[in-house]
Image 1 (tube, helix red, strand yellow):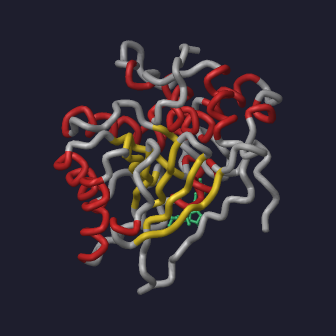
Image 2: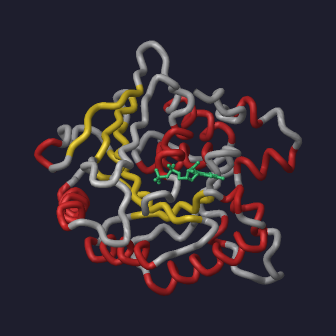
Length: 265
Ligand code: GDP
């Protein structure tokens, strides 16, 4: 396997030079500086925790004796899902959007966690449940494609509608290509069910700053005009460079009720 990513831990990020550090921890905020004067910047800084909150979140994502982070089980039907005992978040997105890479990055401080991928065509797609100590569960939903089979659609719909401990859905969108037709279908489904979700733009290391800014502004506008349940701030991540991953850990900790206070930076 590969060596653990160099910037998995905040302690490593803090050693970087100031502007590089800001870019890794708050990639969206870095784009804000490219906006025209007078532009509405509220959506760039709704969730902007300080170092203490980032560190508390990181501790949740770090396994140690007495705090186990583990793969629990996989399920194709809701009856097979583990009991809804803890607050839960789920990650959904098109196949190839970078979902397994992101979940691996989130769990990189718990290297014993195995994030499985079932990409073989025709292979049964499952929901994979991970447990983070006694604090929350994280669900890796199967990637959807252009022609998602009906049983897949039914499984995802049943999960989203029935899972009462679901605190937030993370909808992954490719930061290089922006919203695609299939992403719109996912948005429509989430809106129809009226469940809270947030969009995460992936692979931002592959987009130039200009392209990224264009995609961010377009998606922000779309969210503002067409959605009710979507959190107005986008989360930008690169699983390769680790940018946005620490902030995303913090947001997951926050929405699952595991950060009692999030003081502003
Ligand atoms: P999934 O199908 O959504 O689980 O997608 P994967 O995580 O398997 O990623 C799909 C492809 O995109 C793989 O070739 C990854 O190496 C690549 N990829 C995923 N995340 C990133 C990222 O943040 N940056 C770059 N450059 N490539 C990425």
